[in-house]
Image 1 (cartoon, rainbow over the protein chains, first blue to last red):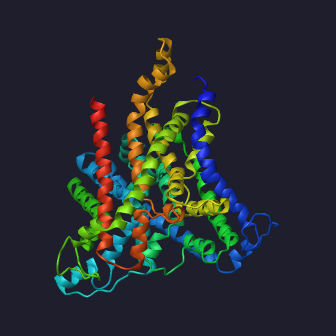
Image 2: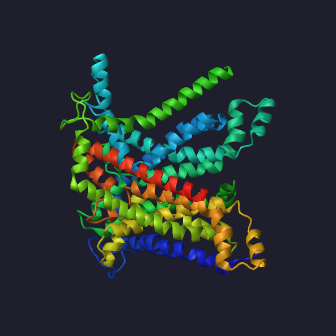
Image 3: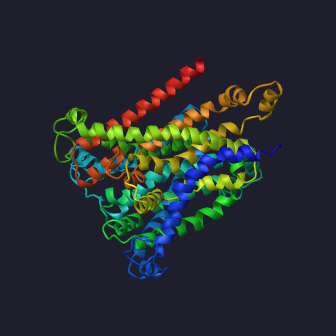
Length: 282
Length: 261
C-alpha cells in the first residue's frame, strides 16, 4: 500500500489538538496538583507526597475501594445477564431479534438521570409504582429497598447492561457457526463448546464490554445519589467534595490520580491486545 | 429440550430483559400524570396538568435552549473533526496510525465524571469561567472519538483505487472528495451526527462539572430528583426525551430525502 504520511498527519491533527487540550492537559495538571501542599491553589510550591499519604490514612481510600469493588461486581453481573441475551439474539436472527436489539439500544440515548429517576419512582415506598400497584390490586404491603446499596447496585446494572451487551453481540458474531456445529458433532458438551470455542473467539467483544462497564461504573455517581440515598460516598463524590466544599484541590487531585491509575492499569494492557482494524472492518 | 421449548424460553428471557429496561421509563410516564405533591400511585386524578405547566414554564424553555446550544455545537464540530479523524483512522496508511487509533480511544475508556472534574480544575486554574461553551468542549473530547469510529466503519469497505483512477482521469482534489470519497462516507457522517446529538443531549456526567452557571436538561432533572418528587419533574423528562426523538426523526428524514435526490 502506498504511504500517506502527510495526509494522515494532517487529517489527524484537529482531533489530536482537541484531545491534547481536553484530555492530556487536564490529566497532567491533575497529576501536578496532586504533588502540591494541601489547600494551595498554585503550582509553585515544592512537590510533596503528603496528599497521597492522607488519601490512604484518612479514610479517603474507602470511597475508592467501594467504587472499584462495585464496578467489578456490576461488570460481572452485566456479563452474566448479557451473555445469554447476546447468544439468543445471535442465534435467532430475524425481525423479532432485530426489534429486540433496537429496543435494548434505545435507552442508551435517554439521559441516565431520567432512567434512574424512573427506577426510583418504581421502587418508592408507599405510593411508588410497584408498592402502590401491589397494594391496590392484591392488598399486599411491601417495604422498599430504595436508599440502600442494593438499590444503587440495581441502578448500576440497569445503566451499564447495554454497554456490555453490544460488544458481546459483536464478539459472538465473530464465531463461525460451522465451528460450533462441528464441535457438537464431535461430542463436545455445552460447557466445552462455551469454554473451548465461544468464549475464546468472542473474547474481543467480552473484553470491550467488560472494560466499558468497569470504567463507566468506576466513575458513576448518579446511581448512588438517586437510588442509594448517599448510603455510601462514591469516589467521584469524594473528589467533588475535596474540590468544592473543602477547597482542597491537591487532595482532590491525588484521589483523581488514583482513579486514573486504576483505569490505566486495566484499560491500557487490554486495549493493546485488541485488533481494532479487524474488529471494525467486519 | 425441544427446539420449541428452547425458543419459548428464550423469548421469555428477552421479554424479561426488555421489562427490566422499560419498566423504569414507563414509571416516569406514569409519575408525570398526577397533580399531587407526593407520589401516591395509583393517582386519584389522572391529568396532563404537569405537561401544560412545564410548557408554560420559562425556565424549562431556557433549559432546552441551553441543551440545544451545546448539542448543536457538538454535532457540527464533531462532524467536521470526526470526518478528518476517520480518514486518518481508517483511510490513510501513515506512520503513527496504530498509535493514533489507540490514543483516540482513551477518552471513551475513561470515567466521564473524572474527566469532568479534571476539566473543571483546568478551567479554574486557567481562570476561565465555565459556561455552556466549555461544556460543549468537554462533550467533544468524548464524542469526537465515537463519531470517528462510526465514520470509520464506512471507510473500511472503501477501495482507495477509485480515487487514484479519478486522479488519473484528471479530477481535481476537490472533485475526488466531492464525487468519490464523500458519497461513501456521507451515511457514516449522518449516523455519527445522530449519535453526537443524542450523546450530548442526554449527557449528565460531563455537563454537571463543566457548565458553570448554565444548566442543561439532565442537570436540572438530576438536581430536582435529588430534592423532591413533583409531577413537573417526570413531565419535563418525558418532554425532553420526545424533543430528542423529534430531532432525530427530522435529521433521519432529511438525510433520506437528500439521498433520493
